[in-house]
Image (cartoon, rainbow, N blue to C red; front, side, top):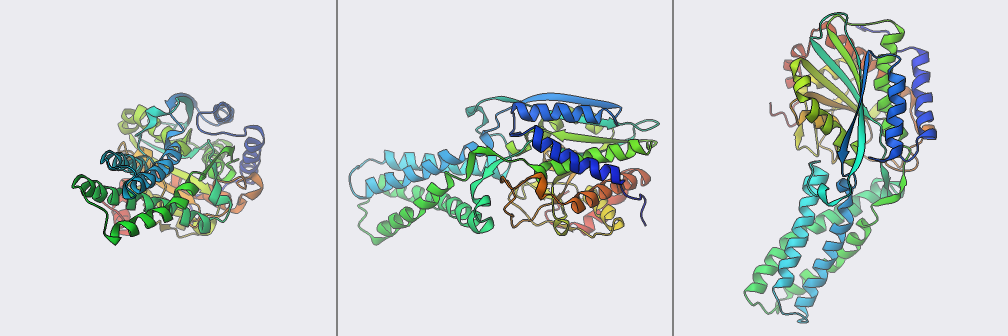
Amino acid sequence: MRLTNGASESTHKFMVDGIRYICENFKERAPGTHSERKAQKFLKGQLEEWADEVEMEDFELHPHAFMGWIIPAGIMGIISVIFYWLTYKGAVNNPALAVIAVILTWFALSCLVVEFLMYREYVDFLFPKKISRNVMARRKPTGEVKRRIIFCGHTDAANEWTYSLHGGLKSLAPVMGGSIGGLIVLCVFNIVWLIYDIAGGMYVSKFWLVAGIIQIILIPFFIAILFFINWRVIVDGANDNLTADFISMGVLKEMADNNKRYENTEVCCLLTGSEEAGLRGAVAYAKRHQEELKEVETVVIAMDTMREIEQLQIYTQGCTGTQKNSNAVGELVYEAGVNCGIEMKETDIYPGAVDAEGFSRYGIESVGFCGVNHDPKTYYHTRLDTADNISEECINLSLDICLEAAELYDSREGIESFREEGKKRFKKGYNK
């Protein structure tokens, strides 16, 4: 049974028009840029119309670290192959080349695992420092704050993914698979090579020739990965992730337009910065405010790329499966979806993350709620992610689900009533 009647046409129009306005007036909102900060300031002004308190906080980050290691990693792979062939052909008879190759390839692999798969700071200090910001808006209850629900999106936009634009998964899969798989192969082989070289091996077996040929075959993949990011193009980010920003803002607008407040539930909208730099805004906010967020029960519903209704899913795990999110909050979103006429599934492990994992890392109950195809379409992280390429139907339904989730959360007086059912429904990666 529906607890809410859905959002108004004026809010629907506000979201669509707002996405277009940001795309047209705040272009190139890469993490830590002036445009990103200006957009956050503008959105803060809008939120002040409907919220009781709006806070804007700056934080420091090294935005290029999250993806900036890719070019050096590709070059390290190529150097490793060259060093092997210098040794194999006898041009250089020195184990130092094998030692350097091991160090280079294992360092590149560690960047892949820690920065890209786990979304942790690792080589950030090697890259320039910049300033980003988060915007937090609160609509307070009529009485004491006993619980808090936060709807979250991010305002920054990504640099273009070259192979996402030119072929989608058909291009992404071989380039990523070949370069990542090739790096792993090199890491293992270089250890074997180092041991053999130290032992004074003579490379007479055909194994060493075949190994060298395989490495040569890998070079095109290492060259291709150098062009994975087009650093000259910053996409509009209409779907990823202005859709989530304006849905989160739409919750507060709907409540204000209807003069609605809960008795003990604070409803919040958080617009993070620099999600595309590895969740840095969500992590900065959760770390700075973890004491406050734990003083009263707080749940976070983090949205991303609300584009395709048939792909609306619940992310109970993230960071490529290395970070567990809350099954209980997942159940809250699931039930809200059912009440709005859609039954959403738990997503499979996906090589990526949403802001929910930044909060889960600090023990704040959070879940991801996204509408992105895991077979990336050509608009994903490309110049085609424009205001002309959004789904109003998906945005409107997602807002209804969020309004329903807030109503359910308040009427059931917190998250505990969702916990046991969440354990049963969401099995993947459950470890609480």
